[in-house]
Length: 390
Image (cartoon, rainbow, N blue to C red):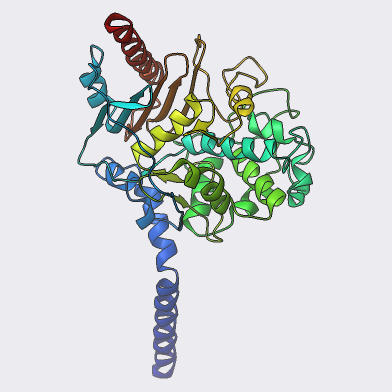
């Protein structure tokens, strides 16, 4: 019996050593998984959204030499602005009118230099890169199958889906985007990212179809990753290198940006871009100016026009990774991300508004409408004041 107990003791010690070794090697993965599980917790969400590089794999990019963003006279904000700012848990806001900062504020202990998580605003940024590559002939035909550039997708539900269809969120993929469902596809994807697995593999593993491609609009975040796969396949370069070279350096950012990545260094293009709020405002201004920046046409004007109209099937307000508000007025388009990230662009009134937030109530009924109402009130107020003062 003593010999049996001794053997069991040795086995127990060996298992403990193995467990300790495994825990050591997996410590980073476990830390990232814990970060995912507490990412949106009330006491951590503000700090997390400004420090994603401390929580996940990431890749730094160069932002070039900061371009001028002159400061104009401070503009009066609409009635109810302060209450809205507090209720929506804004961390940063920059309002541009005619290319000048007319309002800027940072809240909840954050600052102007914080590089903030974009979430799905990153989708609209990727659309700008797609437009550059479409215009220069690298990706000449949006109606080509995605498998022309990402052949590994031939074994997935993306077989037969076109580039235009994924740009419009009309792939027909069956995908559960419910952030409150632990077992949803979007949350399973988050765990893939946290554990350092491959996002390409996750996309290739999607086999369910909700309907034929191109017939129905359905918001499917992994569609944007597929756009990234197409871009990488067409160019032989990473999205990280391309965004740096073709968009960020020509634009001239105040702080070098970064992408959250998977464990293979592939950019989390559907939501992992991190910029300062001022630099998000630069992106908005670029779109408001039809893709032109300081005399250089960074993004083709034709792409800005085409990508920001409601072209998705079903009559929804969606273009190529850009949103159109209900009852959209001429020139209005916006990007949005979960927990209250926005780029609001009103080209006719020459207004661009960048907002970052940590709004845990972002899904409640009426919240998006209230945000849009405030953005419109700001833009209209600026235009009305300009008319009054001449």
